[in-house]
Image (cartoon, rainbow, N blue to C red; front, side, top):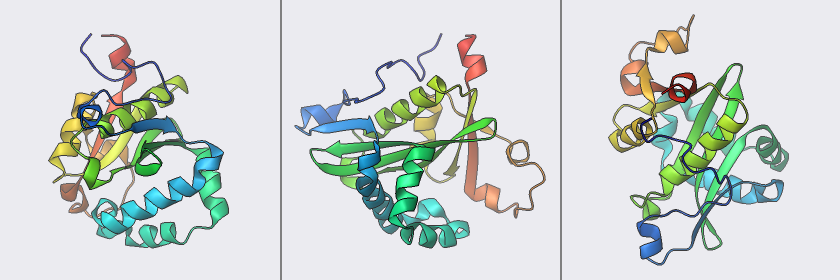
Length: 196
């Protein structure tokens, strides 16, 4: 079997075995607990503010809704999703969200503060979400990524994600075809990985 996701069986907390340690950073990655809702809110609002492109022009309304969510909505999201936070010391620096929609599990909101990128931290956060989704019975995991975000696409490919036809992912959709030149839908099929 080729090296792919789920090699790290420890779900929480994870410490990146990367250049972050060599640089003296104190990075910890863990699945958020109910009491982490304020840190979750803080990093999501940072993501929307510093990197609004990830929401694309089609999601401007959703970004505004996100900023205006009530405290209870933030708390509820922690109970309904898998939220992985990364911290450097006490500072929250990244987030990845996973959630189930019908038969398909999804990855949302992959964000890492620019000051901490290129150290393997995003891959470690993604690993924790994927491990947890698999533990909860995921067979297929999907995500959307802007086509011009080559580093993100390459990271997802390392985990075994493959680009899929948007019609397969979104049957009966009325999206403008131009939308799919800007975004890619990628899928990780765990049923084929388990058999390799």
